Length: 264
Image 1 (cartoon, one colour):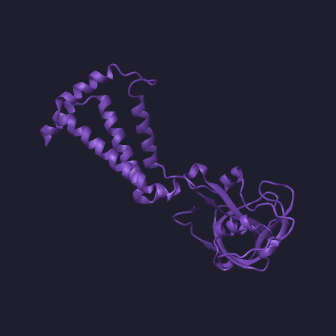
Image 2 (cartoon, one colour; image 1 turned 180 degrees about the horizontal axis):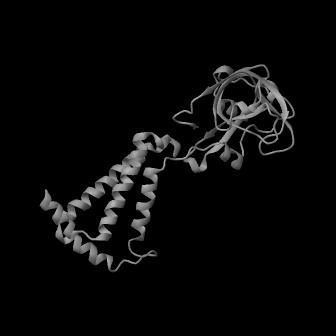
Image 3 (cartoon, one colour; image 1 turned 45 degrees about the vertical axis):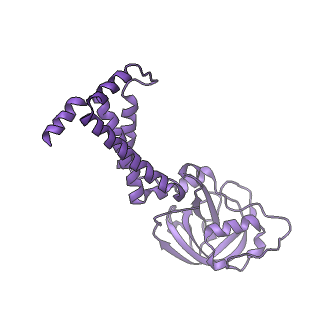
C-alpha cells in the first residue's frame, strides 16, 4: 500500500492534485447537501435526484483519474503535454483553486434560510387588488384546513375579501413587521420556491394580534388560529391603505422553524 502511495505521489503534479481535490470536494459537497437535507434550503425537491447523481458522477471521475494516474503512466504524461497547448482566461490552476475555495466554504458554512429581511427587500406578494364587486366562488378545501399558501392561491382566484369574513383559519409562517402597520399587526409569511432559492418569492397574510407584536420578534415562527376579517391597512410595499383580508388571531402559538421552511 505504501509503495502504491509513493508511486502515486511521484506521478502527480501540483495542478493534477488540485484538479483531483476539486472533483472530490464538489462531489462531497453535493452529497452532503443531499444527505443532510440542506438541499431543501437551496433548490426544489424535483432536482434532488439530479444533485445526488451529480455527486456520484464526480466521485467516479475522481476515482477514475486516480486509477489512471496510478496504473496508466502514459495518462499523466499525456495530460501534461495537452495542458501545454490549452489556453485559458485565467492563469493555470486558478480555476481549480476557485472551485476548491467555493467547495470548502460550502462544506463549512451552512446555507442561509431566507428571512424577513429578504421579504422586506423583495416585497411580499400578499393579496391581489380587491375587486369592485364581490365574486361568487366554491372553494375546494375547508377554510380551517387551508395552509397559508392555499389561502393565498384561493385569494388569487377569488380576491374579494368580503367573501371570507367570518371563516376560521389555522395557518403558520414566520413573522414580518411592516413599517406602516399598527403595533398589533404583523405579516405571517412563507417563501414559495419554483426552482431555487434565488427565485423564491414571499407570500404573506396580515394578522391582527391580541397583544403588541414586540412579543413575537421578526423571523420567529408562529401558528395562528382565528377568524377572517377585512382590514383597511397598507401593505409592506405600499403606504396607502387598502381593503385586504386579515386574520384576527384568537390563539398564537410559537413553533419551531420547520426542516423545510419553503412551499412549492
